Image (cartoon, rainbow, N blue to C red; front, side, top):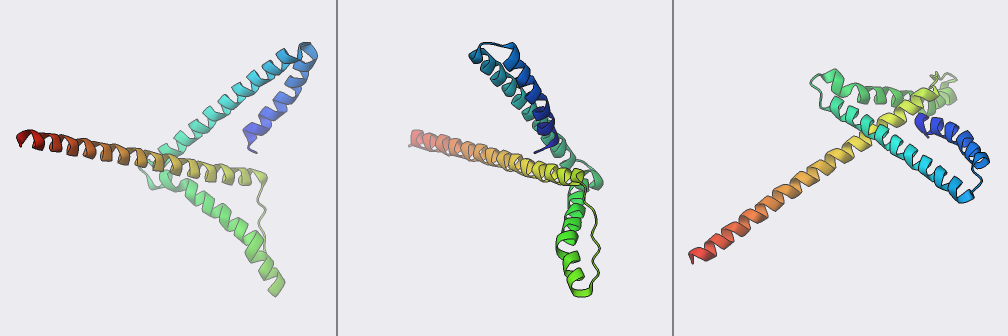
Length: 155
């Protein structure tokens, strides 16, 4: 659950309580709640789309640092996780020494966002490639059709 979802949940709970108290018609209260939830989902979707556009713009940037800071950060976080849950426990068991590094919740959230952004970016990239390939194949098919029709006319 990301930060936005947590914040929206903290807002909607009390808001829905107020609606239940203020609106006596249960059907109208449920309609209002559904409308609010729909608006919140639309807002969250627009936030995700904006995040995806930022990630795609960074991935297409000109400098190495701009294109690669997210993957480098993800590798650092993965290294910390691997150390804390794989390396340090084994070193501790074998030699009695194992250094673990604290990984705050914010870094877990950042890793989740980074992985989610990467997956969304790759999905969009693959979708665009598939769409472009379909357009190329469609153009080839039309070209072959025109050539076949032209050849039959000449016969």
